Length: 438
Image 1 (tube, rainbow, N blue to C red):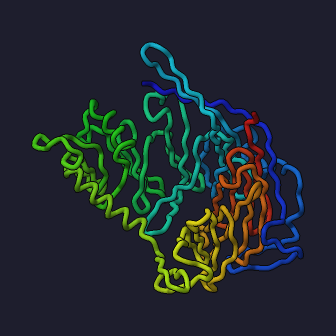
Image 2 (image 1 turned 90 degrees about the vertical axis):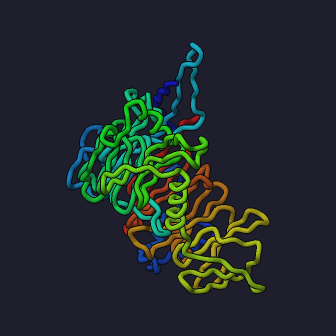
Image 3 (image 1 turned 120 degrees about the horizontal axis):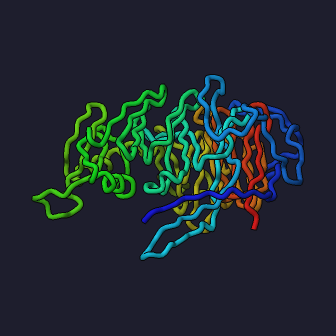
């Protein structure tokens, strides 16, 4: 079966807006600085009732730019959603051409500076800072992961290839990779021709061909399929699993198959039983995903323990569970009705309740955590003192996606808008109305 991914870019406008009101909005303008360290001037959030206009900071290059040109002067680059596309797959089955059209559009991404100046137009199927889980915490490496589709790549990975770029755009690889993982500050990437270890800080790389690793040309397609879609790509202390073989003395079971392990630090290849590799993966996952907090219940309610300190929470019971904890905030959910509840740990008080709550953390500023709440038709971001910073009217508040990096907030939903706000300067640096209409 051969897959062909094609993208057709369409655009139209759907309702999106910004207003300062929210479930806990104050009627009087105020100015202050919360514990997050973000200065807020509420008087600058003027009432808006219609669609926001498209906004940006201009263009870095005078003409449309469909690739990242490495350079030293961009500063940190920010992915943005600038369009949408429908895609379809086409293949041949029993002599007849089959086609499948997606009913749901996918986003097209570009890159801009922190000031909203366009560096790359929306040509990527995927663009995001690389984030991984390590020691129970999310770790963001100083690189961007980019993806594109091309007809020339249709015979593997549905035509998709990944590239890695420095966060500041100073270097970039080619679109050569079909899968990736990481360990500490290095990335391990698969290519159809071999594998690569990449230093996330400098872009220095070391490449191996499959022949160098003892993988024959005939084995490569099955090995890539196994790693990508069966076992997954994971880099452990012991190495990376690159396929398996059935041992002559085994019973043909998964557990007794022999897994090929490659140790990038030494270049060594060795074989272990699949059950041993699975055990190592389980132990590694326990370390990476270990939760920092625990929950206990008493007659007086739930107690959340974080780093050895107990936080009793008011108006809770055995039907409450801890959904998310960041900084001084915790979100609980209840089994009796689908509601979520926002609590402040230091006081134990309930602050908000609703069907969709969240906490947005700034990895560059560990002290900054912002509650978010979605209601029917709108989404609101709050300061740590629970003053509403921003309210967006959105068709799908439950599907709002947000990211925060060094005071720069990016928000978008499934189909109507993408916006980026500098919380330090209280300005919208970029805004695009999206949508593919009916």
